[in-house]
Amino acid sequence: MFDKNVALLSEPASGDAEKHVQILMVEDDYQDVQLLKALLSQQEYCLDAMTHAQSISEALDCLRSSGDSIELVILDLSLPDAQGLDAYHKICSSCSEVPIIIHSGNIDESIAIEAVQRGAQDYLVKGKFDGHLLGRTIRYALERHQQYLELQSEKLKLQAITAALQHSNQQLEVTNQALEQLATIDELTQIYNRRRFDEVLWAEWRRLAREDSPLSLIMCDVDHFKAYNDTYGHPAGDACLQQVAAAIANIVQRPADLVARYGGEEFAFILPNTDLKGATHIAKDIQAAVQRLNLPHLASSTGDQVTLSLGVASMIPHQDVSPVQLVEAADRALYTAKRLGRNQTQV
Ligand code: GH3
Ligand code: MG
Ligand code: MG
Ligand code: MG
Ligand code: MG
Image (cartoon, rainbow, N blue to C red; front, side, top):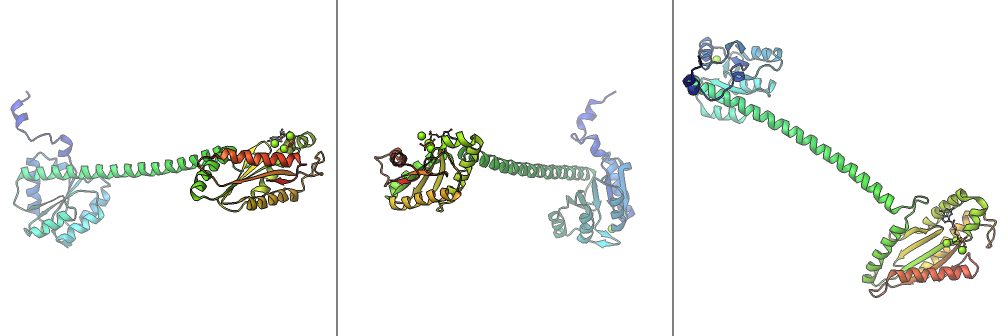
């Protein structure tokens, strides 16, 4: 029958698995072996699960041939092939993943401290402990070691999570760049779109208001482009716009300058810190760059090539005025250029 009192008096939950722990005892003294075995069996440790080696080399053989099955080493420090912490070091360097309890006749406390500092789980002085202390020492050694292993595995998981996070951050960065590209670049011509134009125009307006420096705008429109489409077809019209965009995008060199497709066959330039004279110069360069393309346009009234009309306006930005007024001024100049026969620049 089950005896309640015995159950209550026994040591707290050590568990059956712990009693079957695979111990490697490294000990060259026969009497010490017998003593340890007696204490272990008194604590109900399973002696069948124990291996015994009489020297470091025998112990190393045993660790090698046992695979990973050895769970604990109880190590004498006075062995035929190694003495003191050298013995500990030799075992430890070949099985850093197995907890080691030192069982030594040396009562020098400095050796005990150094051994523990180097990672030994505990240091038992021969003849100075009983079965209970041995049992507790083994249990704590295994627990500490288990905690160490769990910590290592948490560390690995954390590293994996960090790596995954870094990866998804990079992906996010790529996605953001792609989104930024989609939001600000015109698909047909691959230059900036109207949205980007508006953003930059307002930002530069505010900046130059503080600097008290001029902001110029050039509006360009392809002459008789409806007739171009009618003559050569819409796909050819698209290709023409791509060539014009590439040619005029090459004109501006300063990092703060911006060229955008303003709409249909219209392009616009933002030229910060540029006055009317400078901007008119650039407008002529733009006009010339399109002429150099020599794109045939037989239905045009300005000759038989693709040409541009351009309107230029310049202002020193001011709080009381809006950049819309600058756009309207450039538009008026462009309208004048159209009215006066196209293929020209007006201010
Ligand atoms: P103007 O000299 O007065 O500017 O005459 P225009 O024919 O160029 O001006 P209008 O505003 O009458 O016509 C503009 C044409 O541009 C009509 C439109 O189909 C064409 N267009 C606008 N966007 C595109 C485009 O993306 N591709 C093509 N192929 N044509 C376009
Ligand atoms: Mg010995
Ligand atoms: Mg137009
Ligand atoms: Mg046009
Ligand atoms: Mg028109």
